[in-house]
Amino acid sequence: MGLKLDMVGIVVADMKKALDFYRLLGLEIPESANEDHHVEVAGDGVRLAFDTIEIAQSVYGGWEEATGHRIELAFACDDANSLNELYAKLTSHGYVGHREPWDAVWGQRYAIVKDPDGNLISLFV
Image (cartoon, rainbow, N blue to C red; front, side, top):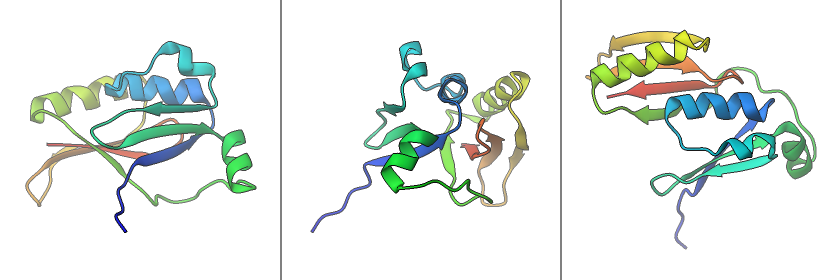
């Protein structure tokens, strides 16, 4: 039996706020999706999906607010300058920087921001 990762889903408290963040990050998401309860964005082989808490409740049979950081989404940038610029753009729009850009010991340029729901979003080269 073959197995393939097909989709990563994020439960969001406010769809528009979440989608605005990911648009600023660089994902192409139509404005018409702001009122939807389920939104999918095609990627390079893996879809990124956004669901409202109401959808999560209906799918899972309930909902408990997550605590701690259990998963990371990491986005590759073209180069260190584009990473630095993207981090500055996101934080200048009011999104919380978790770690400013730095040169990690494993050889990558890295930065971490929080999306509107508090998920850690890594940027790297």
